[in-house]
Image (cartoon, rainbow, N blue to C red; front, top):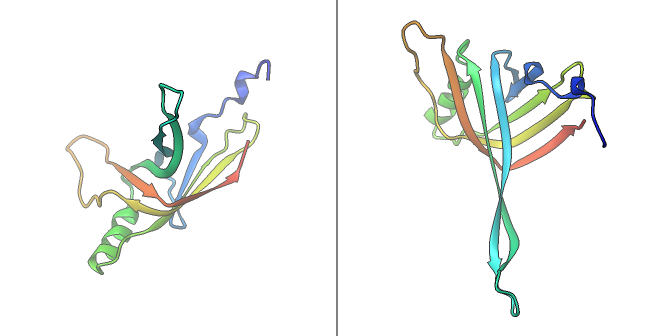
Length: 142
């Protein structure tokens, strides 16, 4: 592509999030990424090792305005039962000026923490959660 229309740059203002089937209108941000694990491979005749991909690590994070106890409740309910909380998270961004929408599902998400209380006087409440995931699917591409 030699150039592009600046109007087509996707804007996160049009982002959406579903947490285990619940639409989270209060979402502020979402990020999911794969960290690629490599093992060094020694090669004769080369001073620099080659790299062999040997694994992937799925990591992500999302931030919400504190509006409800949805996430806290689901995590707490599982933990109280002695079960590992595991969720599906779906991210969507669909700017009307963009060339389409992008939607990604993250499966078997494990949150790194359970936020039970986090507030401060004269400050609007927010919740931030980092997570790992075991699988993903690109549902819609631009």
